[in-house]
Image 1: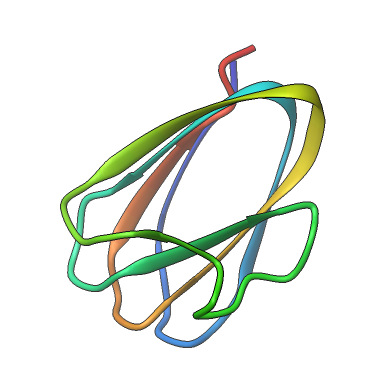
Image 2: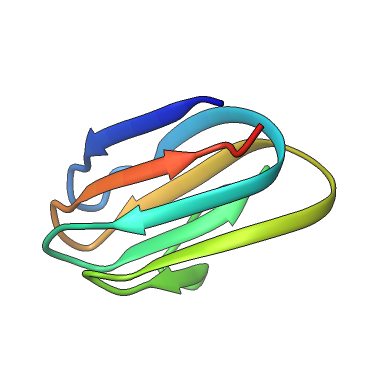
Amino acid sequence: MKIFRKKLTANTEEVFNVNSHYITILNTGDGNVFVNFDDTATTDSLLIPAGMGRSFCFPAVVHDVHVVSDGTPLIQIDDGR
């Protein structure tokens, strides 16, 4: 299992290479996080509000998690392998 932990810069997309069917994303900081899988993240992407997290199970392997934030939260991404 890979675990990524990073403080995001507001309005700057980050890409994490996961190669997994199972992904958990935790937003432990200040600001909303917007997520997309294998494509660019924008403020129209899936929302993970401040202090929240989500787990995902995909039928096909996801190669990259793209995130962008409107603040500077610390996020954690677990690839669940």
